[in-house]
Length: 313
Image: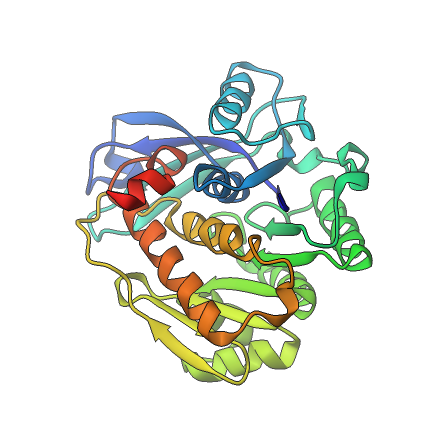
């Protein structure tokens, strides 16, 4: 079986249970495993694929809880390091229905390239980069670039999601963040962005103009998630919006990551990833839309991601 390697942060999400009160007014929080790349790895694994998590958690109670959680959903943790303190994120829904974020960063930024067993990465495998904390200062950023170069040398399939968080990428860091994103977009085989992220990176207000700009940068296949409207998929020649399914939304945390994991699980079933037809991409996106939507029907990211059996129900 081909493998999916997901690099980045694994952290504790403290989910606000007081809907509509946000972080400032909320009092009740529930501990959940989180972190965008870890969520992607969980989606791949829960949907029947083989995934590895590459990153660092603390050698503390939270870190032990997180590693245990990964193992419970069959994510390979051989290249997961436990050292220092675990990163914490506080997430709550405010009165406008928007998610509030606050981060307390731990040891995820110290993850070293030397912790990665590159010998097991083959040219039919996928390496996914999620950059919520990956482009902040620290060793993790160096590791991202080294692993990207290794992926290109191995001719592995490269997936990238900017995972922009305004709580992390402050105004003085935004220009560098965009530059780093473009460096990865240029070399990625598949990229997923939100409608907000495409405007930030391309400086284009029109969605189609933004997608065109991404292809000019070098993106091969682009997916833009549009919430309840579905997902725009483009290969540079063809473009269409694939509708999503109707749900009663409870918490959208991790939905985009579940979507990406579903895409990568399906892509990894294909040996010749360079010749995936647009019709096949449309099928893959429809499947991923369903996975992402179902993830919104419960609290917490990893817990809410459906299995293949759930999709059959």
